[in-house]
Image 1 (cartoon, rainbow, N blue to C red):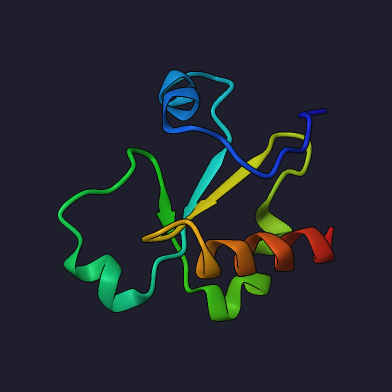
Image 2 (spheres, one colour):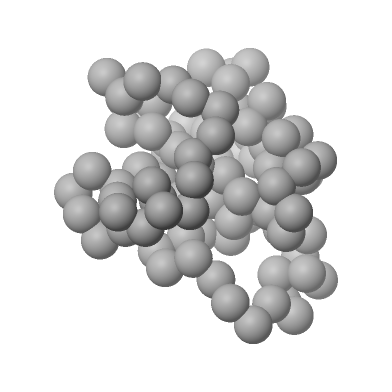
Length: 87
């Protein structure tokens, strides 16, 4: 089982991307922000935070999930909280 933490640095994530240990990465930026973004994290999937519960069943809790947004505050915190509440 992956240890649950609430933060990961970009350096720590960079070390995981492309490896078998890479967790699911969810980009939960607002749709307009995502559409206008010039960069994205490799391997990340975009999903609207308003319906994050719809994909919760696809997440392997033993594997780990990272959620991120534009600034790392409200949107990603909301998504992470909702996913933790679901289990």
